[in-house]
Length: 303
Image (tube, rainbow, N blue to C red; front, side, top):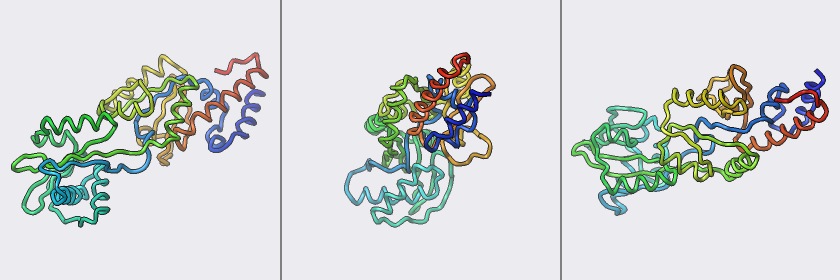
């Protein structure tokens, strides 16, 4: 059709990275009509590896105690599958502390239990501590809650026998200024933005507050996310969902880049993004093209 040829010609003139993404006119029409965005993880906003920003030795804050706590934690962290804990290893290396060999006992997604100098230690998240019967205590919980409100993720070191908490670690990931400004531009364009995340409520709210996103659903399982997405896209056909290859298998795309799925019902179209910061420019350009097309082909509705 003539209008499709016109859109294709206009799409070919778009700045990178949009030409490769908009290979059919339907996609740019969907993008131009978006009025809602659903993010399926907070990872889209934070870049780089986690860094350890604070840690507290519970027994005392002397340098010798803090160095021993950090060395023990880093030695255990080398055996953990938790990517956040790799920041402990890096902190120990930066401090010039040697990483010691440990005897592995148990590995889990949220932590690790190992023996060092005949003592068993546990390093992991809050559920790991609760499963091991480690009491965090009132003062430790107060520290944890304050840091979580700021959007930081927490990990803990404890001794297994006798059971006692030894250290609290706080981790953060950078939210680049380009992401913050991009989210604001999306809001200025009239898009309602919603975050769906498995993160703890306090942590998710801390991240969302830095982005000034007020609508979020937290501590969700994958099935709960799917249910909410189905409800939103079913009621609002102009709602777009931002996935990543880890949450959505789209062909053979393993780039790790966010993928926007805009549409409703059984008709979905994908647009690969190098970053959320690219999205406002793409929507603005799409709206300009569709607006011009609407004036030229006034007998057709571009929806």
